Amino acid sequence: MNKKLQFRHELKFFINYHQYLILRQRLQSLIEKDQHANESGEYHIRSLYFDDINNTALADKLGGLRERAKYRIRIYNIQDNIIHFEKKIKMDDYIAKIKEPLTRQMYDEIMAGNYEVLNVPDSPLFMELYDQMRHNLLRPKVIVDYVREPYVCHNGNVRITFDKELRTGLHSTDIFDKDLHPIRAIDENFIIFEVKFDEYIPEYIKIALQLEGLNRQSASKYVICRKFLKTNTWEDY
Image (tube, rainbow, N blue to C red):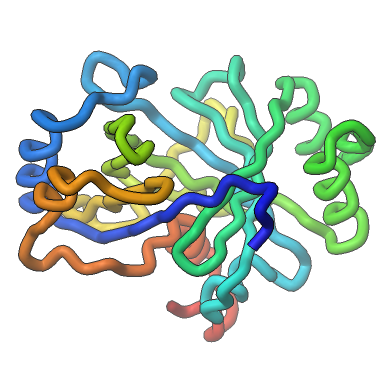
């Protein structure tokens, strides 16, 4: 494991709406809402995921590789004031994230195929992306769209999220397209429940998370949304 990166534990679950209501009621009295959430306690996330000519990110996930990575551009509330290019690294149950801010102009250049804007020697991530795009044909693949209800606990640096209304952009790849109307990627009764933490989860949160039928599952939003574009049987999951 690369000790220079800050790895965190990540646990994922599929839950139904009834389980969501129970967990939310328990957690609301124990931990805080994320300060970035709106009055409803939510914010909107839209990500554009990239993959190479060999669909390495998809194949590695479906193959269950212990170490794998994904690249994405992420925005919030469909605004262009905050745009990040991110690399998410997964190692067993641990995750780490590296990100760099993008300007809207840089985003537009990337989408137009001008990858020279990523030729920034001072940014290892941009240089890695630049190399991937030139040599491995890393390209935009699918838009992943959802609403997040986030909670935080400073003890253990715990972050708990309910990701709702997961949608896919199908063949569209412009996250700022005003005519984009993503379609549901999973049943509306299902919610992706995620728990992230550094070294430990406080005991009172562990107790709150004890719920019959709550079992860890693979819940990759990228894979779920890519299934609508699959052309090969190996892409099944």
